[in-house]
Image (cartoon, rainbow, N blue to C red; front, side, top):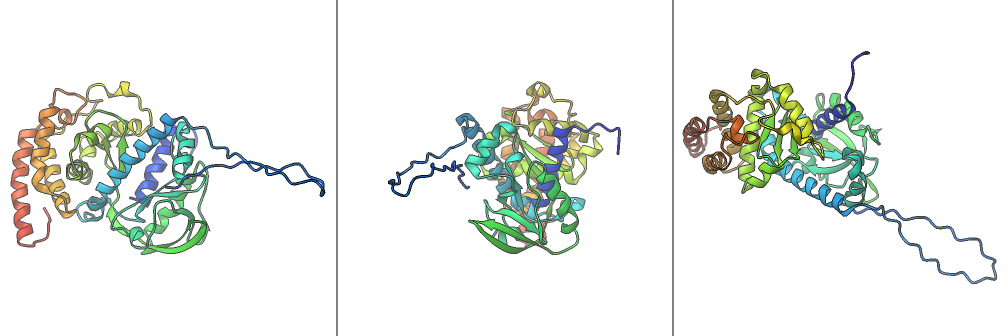
Length: 368
């Protein structure tokens, strides 16, 4: 199509999100300079030439920033994995077949972190596995972090700046038409052929928000949890409550019903950046408070998701109460400001937990 302006940054982020949905759900690299000594006459002694490796100059702060980013993303993926894999029935129209791993190359990060990605994780032009979804087909066949993707169904995988977008284009028609996909992984210099069984799971992209405000967002297809929220939670169970709540909002189409998909989508697009524009985060950033009935419906569904994933639902009420107490609705860029019906929500959750425990005791299916 012609005449439609395209935002390259947004297009790249959208492609990355698409690949994350398809794939979703450390090596050290140093470059050594090759040195060719001048030709020597046969009668001359051959001197020993010391070759000094040339290591890319990377500002330590950049390495630290990338390590923190990857560590937080790893935790999000790890906690989200049981929620995604165990709840395709509850995600309704948002369940898809997934390969079960995330892959990135050095271009997946901003230009300022490219060298850090090369040095810390061995990322180069090729797509490399950065995380494997626990319980997925990828995990069962032994795909590991650090594996590089050589080919899919016998065809070489794309490399370079557009590799993620091109890979998504290749994989999209495959994941919907077959039970498994033939792939070749490069590991320790050896090519390893594998057939990866596809995993039925909730197809939500799990995103990290680079912001210290204590919040979480959903736009119908993505779930974002801010760095501030991750630092606030005290356990993986509490982080699971937040992730499941946003997944439930997506499953119930609440962003669409409130006409908030575009607004929240812009917030997520901003916060996935390494250096987001924090001036746009004043107040609630245009997000309207969620009506109590919608919030309670999401709480109900999320508690079932949490229980089915093996997390402890007994802690849920105390967590949401503590969050509302420490970050009340008066903190406009916090979670409670856009989810203000705390008392109503807690009353509903109290009843749902009782029902859930009864079903678990009777070994009944955990369905709302």
